[in-house]
Amino acid sequence: MVDVGVSDKIVTRGLENTFRFGPGFGAITKAGVESFLAINEASGSPTKTVAIVNEETTGFGAGIAGIMTAGLAPAGIEVVEVLSHPTPSKDFSNIVLKLKEIDPDVLIPSHYYNEGVLFLRTLQRQKVQPKAIYSVLGGASSQYRFVSEFPDAAQYVMDCNHWFDPTNSAALALQAKTNADGLHFNYEVFLAYTAMMFTADAIERAGSGDRSAIMEAMASSIWEGSIMPYGATAMDAGQNTGARPLVTQVIGSDINVVAPAEYAGTSAVFPRPA
Image (cartoon, rainbow, N blue to C red; front, side):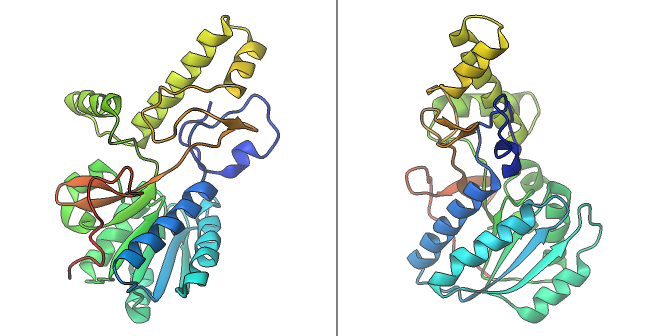
């Protein structure tokens, strides 16, 4: 039972005993394109050019770049540069200098937490201020730890990523409990919690600890007790097809859901203030 794994190879190898409750990078990126185009259109379509900055070591970054490029083109938005970096990376100075030269309307970063922090802080130090930073699986972009430690660098950054349902009372209760324990309510918390609850439901429905029975219960699951914005479970070849990401934005000291509309607590600030 996979909680945070984003590589779609997890569920494309024909492993009948492997299940992923959350979305992979393909579904997240496609949803990210749709939400970005909707946000851009609602603001008068100010975006003409974007630059993508992605990690290249584990594969999902390059995959995201390809899907974003293809998805934005029909709307007349040009990807003017794709800048890749290894994981780990200790210096983003050259990439940020290149971005300053290119001056795209929007930056779309995609990487892990440490690289996300360093990249966004380097943008801040070099005073690179695009109309928006809209990350997809952006690592730091929707992490409470980053917002609390570097609020200025995080301000107005958007991210299409795993996120809990902000309209779900059980999700808010778990967030309050996590915060009371002195922890940040990050992906590793709410996704692992959800994966364990899904597993427990399958074991109970299987009525035993038998491996085959539990696998069958997972494969046929229609569990509706999730704190994620997924609806009832619908497994197809080990992937929960109802899994979806949300788009968040750092506004003030909080992380707010801004898309899609049925989960949004506020409208996106787009373009962001200078």
